[in-house]
Image 1 (tube, rainbow, N blue to C red):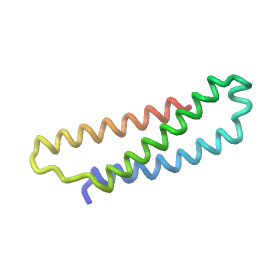
Image 2: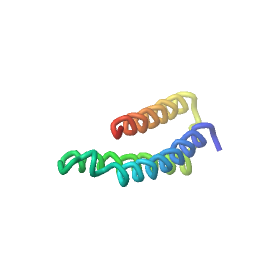
Image 3: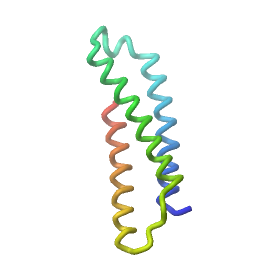
Amino acid sequence: MTGLQKLHLLTGSVGFFLFLVTGAYMNNNFPVLYDGDDMVRMMYRANHIYLLLASLVHVMCGLSMPIASSNRWCWIQGLGSALLVIGFVLLLVAFY
């Protein structure tokens, strides 16, 4: 297993845990947060589901990422992995 695969599996595992935490947060604080405004409620729910989607994408990348054969493809693979991790962090920031 390569370093990128471990990174994606770790990010996916942490992301799934954060998906559960955000679900508990919404369960406990939701009526206070949206106060009857359905648009705000749907925004929180959509961001919550996006966290799950990003976590599952990371887990699948960690389980099925092929090892690049040339240096150029390794660099592109690393760039793509970095963008996926940055995207996940931005989704988490968007939720909060």
